Image (cartoon, rainbow, N blue to C red):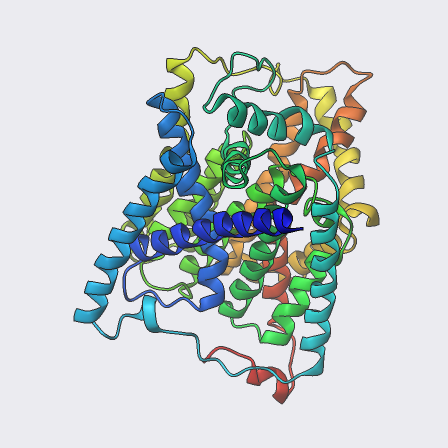
Length: 468
């Protein structure tokens, strides 16, 4: 029993360090004038901490320094301490620092439905947490790719690919994150390290909720949309405990797209684009599909600005250089490692464009979108809300959400048209992957649903939960 408690203490210590590193990254990337609530900071800190630590482990791999707990932890911790001391010095000189001291003071809702939605989410995460820690890593991609890499990196104490032949060109945020937790535990323990996935799920839902509140939806409706997203279908729930990289990619995609959308609408904290850049880096470093997803966010934002004909168009476009810098931050270090170690990008994603596959994929994708098993009523609700918006979408920043979602649905179909499978295997290939590809987009669909709910009337109690 004592050994088990010590393992839990070491695990929570490792997770706490991730939060601390992420909190420090927030302080570095955001100016003092950026007003974030505590819940937003905690939700963003987990992902940023994972990004900072795993990129540092990649640097250790480039320098051929073995993975030891102190080599992984000590330098980032020292840098974080110096950054916090610097931030404290700045806050002493500027006591009104919004980032460190400000808390969103919106009135708390007393609507009973708020607590009902909260209770439903609490039950969901109790189940997901128990399901994660009571079972070892068992899902195929977790066994064959993400978890397998993590074990290899831990046992070899470095980025050793000599015994890896399949998918060794995949980005490694998730495997290195699991390797770090193995180092914290001092052993390979597939049960405990999976706790990080419910935490990422909770952080993702927190961002959905907080972004909706910033979009001026009252708290009860914001939590209702969040619960609607989480509880419709099984796809999101399953990814809370199967140790795939798709949940973390969905988290970073929501962070990037959500922050860019708030920036487009003028509801984001000041200087938010550098923070958005870190989410773009996380997307690119998290999964192979992260790079095209990140590019589509930038393109959707650019097209929205051009379409709406902003009077100061150039000054509005220039901040989009931050997301591009984030993409390079997540892509170039791993690309350098691949070139130095002669790791070739595989051809298991792209073969050649074959138009019959494009048309064959359409009904399969539509079936997943509208089948209650996968996403419940979420995608139908998103479609209804997009149609409900009508022409108003083309005269508002909501166009960004529609372009991002629609553009990626088209990209999924084009990707399947280039899938390296035979005609007989193709339906199975689509059915085995499409729910994960759609999961990356579904948090943004929740934001679109939230925008539509703003057009509906609300009672006095609902108005109490609105941001001032």
